[in-house]
Length: 248
Ligand code: NAP
Image (cartoon, rainbow, N blue to C red; front, side, top):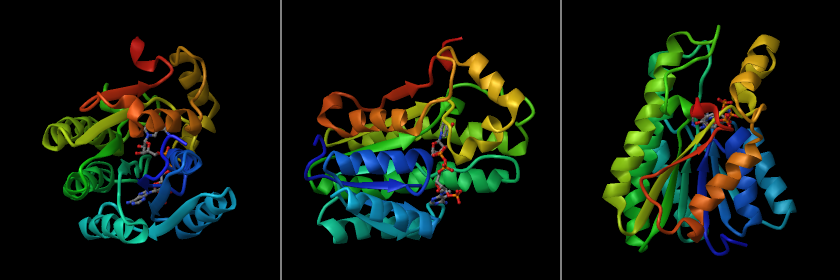
């Protein structure tokens, strides 16, 4: 119960990495405020957490809309009386998305989350923000057949998330710690095109020294470390969980 008594807001909580983080945080004692654009999957997550004895609530929200982000932060405090942890996780990627859409969700959404959570966390005397960047925040893309116009936006947004993490870490210190996670290839609906296409799947396995995709639960464990006091002297930092992909 490393998060007992804490309240955590997770965006993009209905699927993949956000869902795994929400489940793990609830198991560790946090009350979870789960936000997503997918209502039925979000409500199903809440039932699952409650069946396991945890506390959680779902809020339908689009992180690319600043008012929605302000709303979920306010609702988190109303629902559980306080807010301690904010995970800016919601993200999109893949063919079919425009530059504007990817920047709005993956970069502006993280900015709004940091901007509006920081004063509340500071007012309460402390807190933690975790931003989900990517290996695409550390290098250019090497994704054969997949990179189109959206790819440049994805790379720019994920690099931008690292910049926001460093700046908000300075803004939030010493009360609020702000860190980022850079996952490598994780098997989630976001990467379905890659893991369902044999040559792409093989390419990921070959270019990842650990020889496989990550499970969302492995990224959630990193988020738990950053959310808990185990990382009490860590801020403005990047936790790379990529199976060695950026070691080349
Ligand atoms: P996922 O399974 O698609 O989950 C993301 C969730 O966020 C989905 O439910 C998605 O809904 C939701 N979402 C999309 N736009 C939103 C918005 N504007 N407001 C609120 N929620 C929104 O993806 P994932 O792989 O878990 O990705 C989570 C984060 O990790 C993203 O930031 C992603 O860029 C990052 N990441 C993923 C990988 C990977 O290999 N999977 C690697 C590095 C970083 P829809 O399904 O309707 O879009």
